[in-house]
Image (tube, rainbow, N blue to C red; front, top):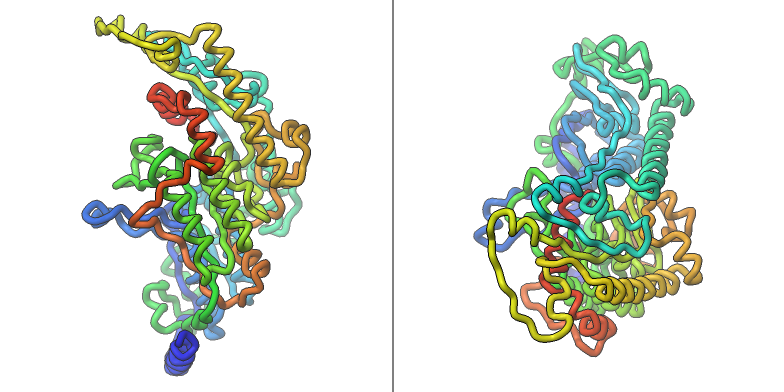
Length: 560
C-alpha cells in the first residue's frame, strides 16, 4: 500500500513541477537571517501554553529551502540579508556548510547587510560576494570571552560555595568559589579561544581567497567604515538594498528578486520521500535532569537553568530510545546533542538506553554548539561521533558540592532549627559546611562516578582508561581538538550525520528523515538496568541541596 501511495504522490509531484516550469521563477531568492538558528527546534509546550510560543525557524528549515533553490535550474542564486545570526560557532559553521553546498550546486550566494559583526562576517565570507550598505561598517572583529568570580560577593551576603571537582580543570564552579581565574582555567580558556579564533581566520581567508595573514589584517584592522571596508578587502562593494536588482542584472534588465515566501509556490518541489525505512533524529538538548523533558513557555532574555531553560529528562529520553529500538520502520538513528550536562544518573540512564538502540541499528551522534560533561556521556553509544570544528565538547569529569547559606540567614535574622535522625541526614544541608569526613566520602563518590565515566568513554572510543583520563579530568575541547584526541570521529553538522546514518543502514538518499517528538505517555525506567542500580547507589547524592547547588552552579556557567 505504501508503494501505491508513493507512486500516486510521485505522479502528482511530477505534474505539479511540470506546471511550475511553465511559470516564471525569480532569478534570485532573498532570505532574511534575523535571529538564532538552532539546528533543531525544541518541542512546543502543550496547549494552551504552546499557543503563545512562536514557531522556531531552524537550520534544517533553511537547509530544505536552500536545497529547493539549488534544484531549480531557473534560479541563479540567493541573497542573504543579514540582520542577526548570533549563535554558537558550531551553528555558524553549519550555516556556512549550507551556503557552500548551495554554491557547489552552481548557485551564487550574495551577502548584504548594513553592518557586519564577527558572527555575520564569518558567515558572509562563505558567499560569492559581500555587499555593504552605504554608510555601513564592518565592526571591530575578534573574539572576547569574559569570566566572572562571585566568591567575594557571596561572602558579603553570607553565602559560601563548597564544591569538590575531580580535577582543577573541572572549572564549572570556579565562578562561585574563586576570586580570580585559576592557572588551569586560564590555560583551558586560552586553548579554546586560540582554536576558535584560528577557525574563523581560516574560514575568512578561504572565503575571501586571501592568506591567513591577510585575513588577520582584516580582523585586526577594524572597524572598517563604508569605503574603508572596500579598500581593506573586507567587502566587495557598497550598495543600497534597492539597487540589488540592477547590480545582479543590468541597468536595462534588472534581475528578478523575490523572498522565499513569495517564490516557494513557483519553485520546483523536492522529490517525494521513498517509502520504507527512515532515519530518526533524537534530540537531547538543555540541562540533563532527572524526570521529564520540558520546554520553557517563553524564551528568556538570559539563561536561567532549571527554571527558564530547556531540560532533557531521563524519563522522556529513555522512553524515546526504547521506542526507536522497537520500531522496524526506523532503519537508523541520529542523536543530536546540544547540552552542557547535568545529572550523572540521568546521563547514565540515557546512555544505557541508547546503547540498546545501537545494538539493533546504526546510531550516529551529531554534536551541536555544546556537548560537554553529561552531553558527552550520552554520546558514547554512537558508532560514529560527528561535531563541528567549533563545538565545545569533552569536560569528561565530575563536580559535586553545595551552597552554604547559614551566614545569609543570620544576617536577615532568619532563625531555624533542624531535628535529624541518622549520621548523614544533613549531608547536603545548606545550613552548614561539609565536615572533613563528609568531604572524604563525597570525594570517594566523585571518583567512583568518574571511573564509570572513563569506562564508558574508553569502551566507546576504543581507548585505554589512562588515555581517556589524559584528555579528561574536566578538560574542555573544541570539536577539532577533540578529533585530534580521539573523542570525535569526523567534523561536520547534522546533515552529515544523517548522511552517515543512511549509509550505515543502506538506506536511499531520498528516504524520510523524521524528528522524534516527546511521547504523551512514559514508561518507567527499569530498576534492574545499569541506570537503575547507579540511581539507587547514588540516591543520597541527589538530595535537594545538590539540586540547588547545580542550579546556582549552572546559572553562572555559560558552557559547562
